Amino acid sequence: MKKKIVWCCGILFAVTLLFSCSVIGNDSPSGNSGSIPSIGELSSDDLAAAANVYKAEGMRLLDVINSKFYNAQGRYVESINTGTGAKSKACDCWPAANTVQALIWGAVNNNKYTSRLTAYIGALSWYVNGPGYGYTHGGKRFFDDNALLASHLMRAWATKARSSVTMNACKIGLYFCWNNKDANWGLPQTEDKLGEGRFYTGPATSQAISFAIHSSVTGGATDRHRAVGFWNRLNDPARGIRTPGNLFKNGSQFINGVWESNSGPVPGATSHMITLGCLLYNETGTADYLNEAKKFADALMEKWYIAGGGFNAKPHMGGVGSVVALCQVAAASGEAKYKNAVKDICDYLMNHGKDNGGYYPTRDMDWTVDRHGKNSPATVDLQSQVSAAAALLCYAYLDIYGHLPPLQ
Image 1 (tube, rainbow, N blue to C red):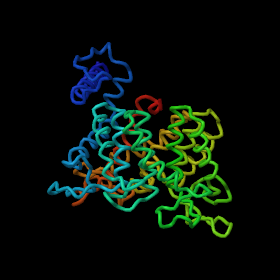
Image 2 (cartoon, helix red, strand yellow):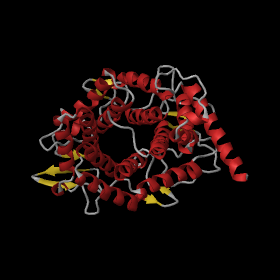
Image 3 (cartoon, rainbow, N blue to C red):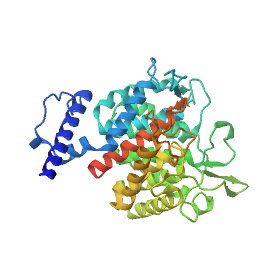
Image 4 (cartoon, rainbow, N blue to C red):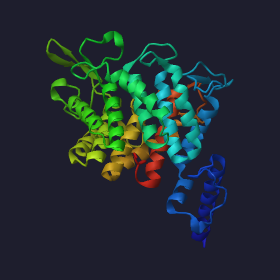
């Protein structure tokens, strides 16, 4: 009898939560859902989505972000004062890019976020400065910011915001990078370093991801060739970007006919290569891409993942990128170890990373910090919170459906 009572209560909770999400978010394909579904009409996916703790927490956090970090001009702010609620200036381009990412993962889980995603994409024109995006209005242009923003906009176009506005916004950042690359397909971080032979990994991986997503949707050979071209160059032993341990550095430089790589590997570059390998595998069916992505994922987990202790990286500097990448390889390979690792990271975030105010570790903290039971800092930044929201909502989708949103 006890088991039956618990089961019935669980079903009632799931139905109640599902209905509340539908009413609040108008979350039906037609946008006109209004009837309460009977238990017999609910699919197993419906029940799983309604009761999924990662989805619920990711949505709670994204709702907080949309309420507290959004200003009257339709832009997100860099930070807030947790005591007074005062908002800073509009955020820089990098957190703006990761906000797009968080809104995408929100929208694929619940359609109520789609209108905010499309509105924010339209507001990104504020950052345009000449041929690319500035780090702020009228600010200096960074190639890594432009490429990262473009990659998230391309995913938005491929999933929840298919429009010419989205594609045009994507092309600004993507072709600012593509049109400035050198003969070795390299870019520095900023324009003043052009011509110095620099091959910075950030712009390269993000451009490749954009081209791979677009070719996955359109079947275009040109974009696939560009994505594969970056893949080959990033894996080229002569450039020294890929380490013998299957991790990736921030870049290399071609000086006097010789490649000189920079300091040690970083989780951000490695996670992007995992994502790129999975995208190329999903499009082409070539097993080598997935096998390489799995090597990178295994190395990434060995280096930065701590079982039961989180992930040893900043939220925006490898944290969210690694969660998304591990979700990608889990979906592509079907191997439980990758999904289990992401679940463990998200569990640690929710049980230890969240402070008394409901905020997650700020951008100066790793995802190994224990903030449970502690008061929120006086200032909380947007970058860290959208990173946590995107991570939780990405895993929630994988946990509920067993795959990631199709690119179509």
